[in-house]
Length: 387
Image (cartoon, rainbow, N blue to C red; front, side, top):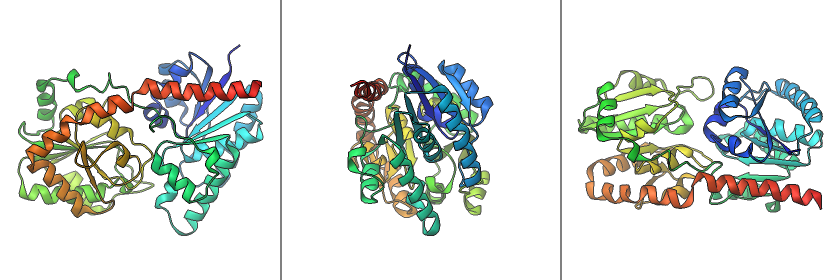
């Protein structure tokens, strides 16, 4: 009889994007169940990955009463199923999952940290989030920050002991499928067709952003920088690939106006396959305020796009300034604009950066290597419980 493994995230899109393929791989070794909210979407994910699912209503906001109800329900479920391992991702799923697993006496309780909202919080909210993270980590057997920068932050904030922390491989929660994110799968004609569908000139230098269109992804600064550049250059366009979220971290009104009205800014909404958009683009711009280990930067670099990223953990571990991209200060539009200008104008630099993109990703962040490292972790914990 195989050991039971439960993986839990707050919403199914985290399973889809952050852990794509991983649970299917783990199902070759464990009896796997994916737990998340949004039952219909969760079931679609389970069918695709070939794993069982269990719906648990979780919210991304601070909702103490709903969270207590979720803990009660999850404890009941875990006591019934008796898994050997519960592995959580995302902050809300972390506190609910780890606390529930601790109460239910699950022997192996693991939590991956792929970004911390408290890094951008202040005042009472910061104190509350600090307490939540400390409680999550105290209930966990092991904590896996997915970047060196996150590990250093956790240690400096004294959120848990250094003995409890470990980075898997070179970082990242899931690595990247470099055979899937391969620019050779797309022809020049494919890119021209996509550009034409958005009325983008074949001669344009296309900057692309992929992710949620919210404030802490640096979208306000990005739009301001791009509008300034486009005032001076005709042959530039900006592709925004991702959902516009208006609840948790809405964009400025002037930013929204430009997104909706600027002729050279194209917002595509959420896309299940971002590869054609990368293939039709020239460079990624990713000025996020905080990240764990951003898959988008891995994907773009694997598709041979030089990347302009903010100087935050994760981003500054994937990108080496002047080698495979440019690193700019966080939350400042002027250095961002200057980097975009440099990428656009300096063809020699652009060629050098482009040449060095994919090789580094293939060498350090291949998906199957990450999966095997996580599997080794699981097996080592199970073996230690036997002894």
